[in-house]
Image (cartoon, rainbow, N blue to C red; front, side, top):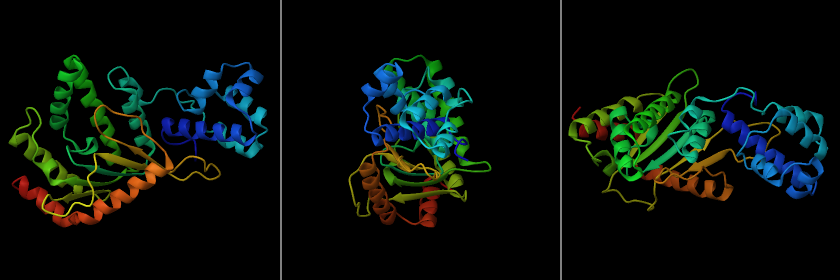
Length: 290
C-alpha cells in the first residue's frame, strides 16, 4: 500500500504529484496561492517536499485542480498522519541533507554504493563511525555528545540490513578504503571493521565487491549511493531512483533523472571491473588476518 514505508518517501511522492497536477492545468504557484489565499512560499515548500501538507490542504488543491476521485484517494493516503519518524529525533545533531537521506533510505528497497575513500555508513562498525565523527568534530567544533548521538543514529540506520524486509545493498569499494586509517583508527580497530565487512557480505541481501588498485579503473569518481524504491501504481511522476553523494559537506539527495541514469551506468561499470563476490570476501578476510 502506498501509505506504508518512509514518511519522507511519501512526502516526496506527494510533492511531485501535486506539482504535476498544477502544471497539467496550466497554473503557476502565484495563481494557485492567490486563489486559495495562501502564500506562494507555502505552495513552493509543499511542492519541493520541504513541508508535509495536511489532508485539508491536499483536499483543497485536489478540488482546485479538478483531480479525479481515484487519484485523490491515492494522494490523500500519502499524507503523513504518523507524526515524527525515528530520525527526526536526531535533527538537532544532523544536517538536513543527512536527515533526508535517512528518511529516503528507510523507504528504499535497494542501495547501490561506490566508495573510494572510506567504508560506507551502512557498513561501518560503531568504533569506526565514532573515529570519523571525532575527525568531523575538529572541523565543526561540536561537543562530544553530538558525536555520540550521530553514531547512535548511524547504528539505528543500519537496522535496515536485517529483519523481515531487509534492504538490499550492493557495494563496490576501492581496496585503499580497506587499509586507510583515519584519525585514531589503528590496525586493531581496522581489523574489526574488516571482519565486520566479511560477516555482512555473508548476508543474502548484501554484496560487497573490491576494486583493487592494480586493476584497470574504468572511471575516476567520488563516493555516491543510488537508492531504489517500490513501484507506485498510477503515480509515475517521481523517479524510482534517487542519488546521494556521500561526501563532506553533505548535500541533499537528488532524483534528477539524467543524473541518476548516468551514475547507474557508472556503477555497473565499477561492478563489472571489481573482483567477484567470493574473491572480494577472501581478499577482505586476508587483510583482516582471518
